[in-house]
Image (cartoon, rainbow, N blue to C red; front, side, top):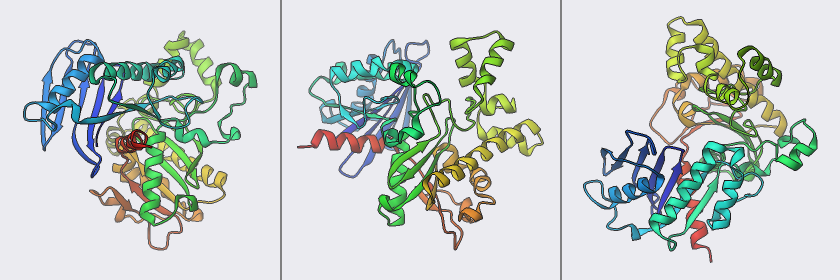
Length: 400
């Protein structure tokens, strides 16, 4: 079966078409600036890449162009859209209503829209994508939703509850939900397979590090804690997000800056993090380059991130009562050897020892970075959320 994997943003549509007979990617691409002037599609297939400027008033037109690019011209990979057996959608927020992936119904779409206040930018875009997919592909093609939050639904209340009045949870569903769950699930399973272990035997800390970063404690194959919270703003310092701060910092800045509500939320999400501390960039590569050139604020920003990741690794080892494996993934986790080195430095007491030469390796989907004799395995695992979504989609639509 060929499965189309979709990730809709408010003005974007990422896609991959995966042949599940061998899990190969037939094509992938991105529709940008949907609803904005200058919209275009970039399509990749057969080793080639094509970019076309085309008006996308809505996600529906974007889906129609995706079908056109997949079925005609040099980038064609199927003769007709009828060859697509199912569509899998990434959904950021499922709250407590969704504990597993689901085949889409109108009621499910309505529920995803209802809980949009917990992820307003993401969930509303996903709803647009779901409705547009049904319109373009027809009701006979099944759609499946895979939630970033479902992997974290195994957290115990002591990990997901906040120290606010309990009625805030009962009335408004205020609790820790986490994010990047599909990535954490994929890399923890891949790591266990690589180590030749049953996931049930392992205590892992998985570090998904990128422009948005989250750390997860995985005990026996299940999430028991994660760094992101009600929203993806919590946890470690990120590209433009502040991560964990004293709530009083927020109210104090509101007084000083004269901004409140959504304006302050935008400030915390878009003006802080590596960008805010360094004053250089939200990109860790730019920050590290500036630090190497002597920029003290850039060095501070880099040190803060590395330090915070290290603290989470230690905290989660304590929470799980042990540690067998640390996994680095995501754009930074997979490619930034300096971050991995700094996180693992002086962690021998916990059983973590990194091999400096292995840490320089590139080009493989999984690399064992552990020094000889390291009690805790240190792995780099390339994440593949799209494949995880495709696998869930295949399982659901072929279930008897």
